[in-house]
Length: 217
Image 1 (tube, rainbow, N blue to C red):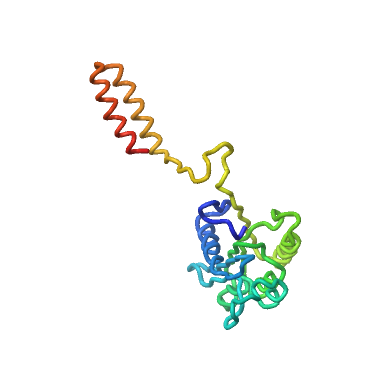
Image 2 (tube, rainbow, N blue to C red):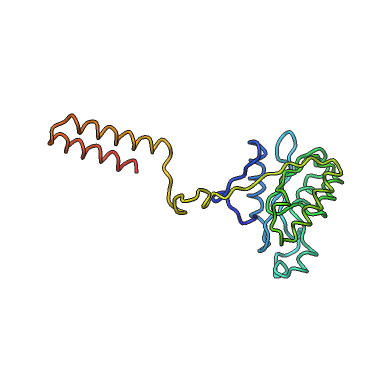
């Protein structure tokens, strides 16, 4: 999920502002130097975003080859949710946490509960690949959050590439409804005029209308 881009996917199942803050978390995830996972988190209160976080080493620790050594990396790295909550401090109480990139883990669920975050917007871990370790980790985390009374709101990610069976190939631009209607209208007008005009006038009209049609393509 962390490699999904705004150009190839859309977030569904959320209202306008929830969707915007998830999109912000997705943007923040791109700041991570982790080559294997890019996770972003945003914490908001009634006034808007108050803290941002992404997965990475603590301040002062170099982003070096340890990022590529799984066991050592896992012992050092801070998760996006941890970074956002640390940044928010006391303001995390009663706030909403938005997460992009990976399911919330048990480690982060404990901190979410302890800091009294009231709501989390996230993907449903049950939709993870059945062979992924995040399936069981994510389910355990949401079970803890639900038991502690944290409200959960799930969103889904729709892949825009190949979404429509038999649709245009990726990279082929699609005309807007206005453009399609304009081109159709020009075609209808051309056929109507050709039935009323002389052969010479028909040729002149055809050339003039064709030039207009080409400009809209």
